[in-house]
Amino acid sequence: MDDIKLTTLTKFSGCGAKLGPGLLDRALCGLTQPKFPNLMVDFTTSDDAGVYKINDEQALVNTLDFFPPIVDDPFAFGQIATANALSDIYAMGATPITAMSIVGFPLHKADISILRKITEGCLDKLKEANVPLVGGHSIQDEELKFGVSVSGLVHPDKVLVNNTPELGEVVILTKPLGTGTINTALKRGLATEESINASMESMVKLNKYAADIIKKYNVKCCTDVTGFGLVGHGCEMINNSGFGLTIDFNSIQLLPGTMECVKAGAIPGGTKKNMEFRGSFVENISELPDEVKNIVFDPQTSGGLLFTIDKSNVESILKEFKKAGISGYIVGKITDNSNSIRINY
Image 1 (cartoon, rainbow, N blue to C red):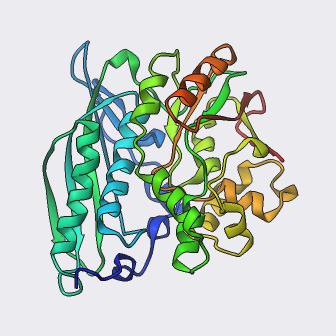
Image 2 (image 1 turned 90 degrees about the vertical axis):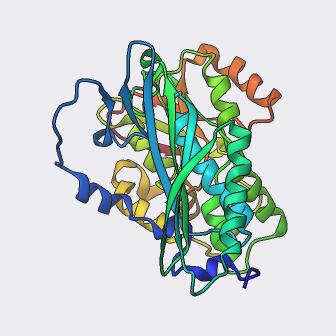
Image 3 (image 1 turned 180 degrees about the vertical axis):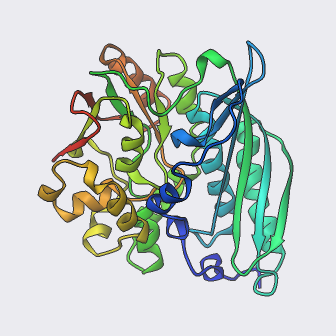
């Protein structure tokens, strides 16, 4: 049974198995908890991880992410799930220090050797990140799910959050878009080998290397582009900031074959959910071609870091990204168009 396709072990795939942003908003809206003096970041800001100040020199950063398989190779699935979870720590400006695995396994459908291969993939990425796996929790489940909870450390004064852009700053993304679309096309037999390989390479790549470069600059606002798509995470970036975001669609880098897959109708279910929840924030959405909308709302897995930076530092940081083999590129800029997004194409 160890040669079974992982994607047959779940009724859903990728980001489509996650709750949409609208449902999450309804579930969490208005919830409160007691005030904790040392709690710096919690769930109320939709940030990438929680942050708790330990002392004047250290803050603890915690995150958790898990999902059903989006590829059929168990080793690669473990790599992707782990890189995806680690990304939240990097997006907060922190260094990951420990990890724990979360497993739901359909023992009656698949041999336990599959879980071993998934964990081997997880350990491969944790080794690259210099992070020990210290334990975890598993349950028998009707559908296969795997993920990682990660803890990290950061200086309290160097925490990066997702909603502190400044007017005129340039917005940069460190990976191409298209993983959601290509993963969907793969399941429908529409993706080319080039697209599949490029998507896999992007998803397993750690954001550690981009984060190490970002730390050299005066960056304060950062997130990663994952299940809510570029527009969804862009909305979080400008939410309650008083600013807006202009996206230059023609500047966006796409994984090979992404546009062709979109035109062939390989649209993830998560794209529609993202559009329903955040479409009203795009002031010119009625003017946009369907292929543009389907790309900017495409739910990503293990996407790149999205951050704002003063325009005086753009050339320098892009040169560093290029030298390090990172696909850093300008997405757009922060504007005075309060709490709305405009997409130029």
